[in-house]
Length: 108
Image 1 (cartoon, one colour):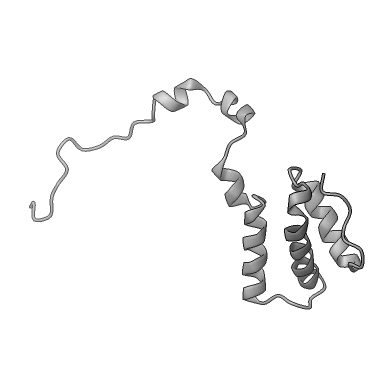
Image 2 (spheres, one colour):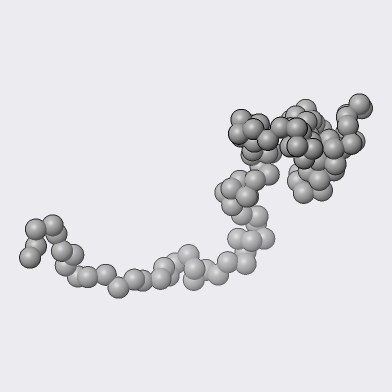
C-alpha cells in the first residue's frame, strides 16, 4: 500500500498523488519517493509554474519507471488479455497478395 502523501505537500501535489494512486493500482511503499517527485513536477505543471521540455521529459521518464505510460502498458499484456485472444490469431497470419517474382531495379 502506498499510503498517504508526505506531510507538508501543497494541495496541487495531493491532487496529483491521489490521481496517481487511483490510476496506478500497483503502487506500493517502495514507490513513495518516486511518486513524491512525480507530484512535485506534476503540481508545477498543473499550476502553470513549470512546463519546460526538460520537466515534461523528466515527468514522463518517472511515470515510465512506474509503468504508467501508454507505451509501458502496451509492452505487457495481462494474463486475462492473453486468454481472450484466439489461437487462430497466432497461427494463421493474414496473407497479403505478393508477386511471385518481385521486380528488381533495372528490370524493364
